[in-house]
Image 1 (cartoon, rainbow, N blue to C red):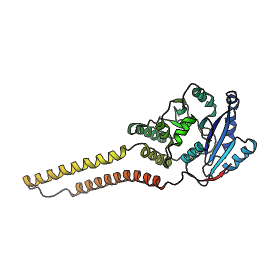
Image 2 (spheres, one colour):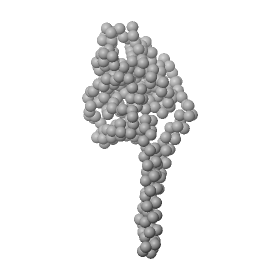
Image 3 (cartoon, one colour):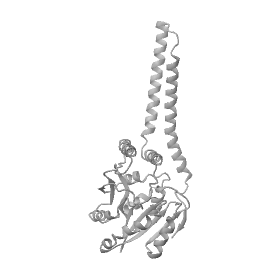
Image 4 (tube, rainbow, N blue to C red):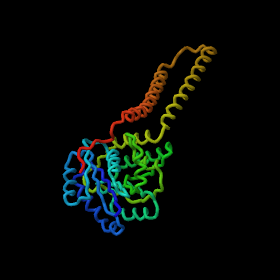
Length: 309
């Protein structure tokens, strides 16, 4: 039989482990008819609750359940990467344990793979249940990314994606430390079918993604797949140099023609503050790229494994 690897990143999801497993197995008969069996890879990202214990309970009754537990919290990107490396299936699907990625879509997703698509991705067409300010900035991020990057990132795209082994192997070729999976999916290409569905709220528990974490994640995406911010910093530097040169010329001409004494200290202070702020902003942009380079050249592992069952 062919194998479908189900990768489930988990961080403090003890309440959802069993529920997810039960929902996933509702598709078991469909895939067995197709000659496909499951392997379920729970990737524990350093959980503080009883997530590991819950997965081990499932393992005692079903040897298709596997556990990969990190030594600490390395982040979802590391968990996804670890799951892809560990997977053995001819087909691989990424899913969240909180059931916001409905397992009921799997048969439909696989039907598109049978039609010849290399991957089937999902996107939310609504953000029901999400704070409006968060939805606004999320849409703003996607619009910005698609303007400044050559890599297409679809608005509302989820990590929930069914892929062939060829696509997975291509993703694993990208071994960078600073990972932004949504961008990596777009960068590797291949023929992708997009499947739309209404937003589904978490089954149990609370989201681990605060506004601040999402903001930092967006910066990660921008610096990973676009160098436009560096170009903006350069253009701003050139513009301010031109403005300064013109102001010098105006000041000299006014002094020679009208003998106007030096004046305007308040405005001078405002201009210095503005220019200083722009300089610090541009240095911050350069610093972001430099910090990513710094972490890459260290060549630290993306994650460390504590337990592999």
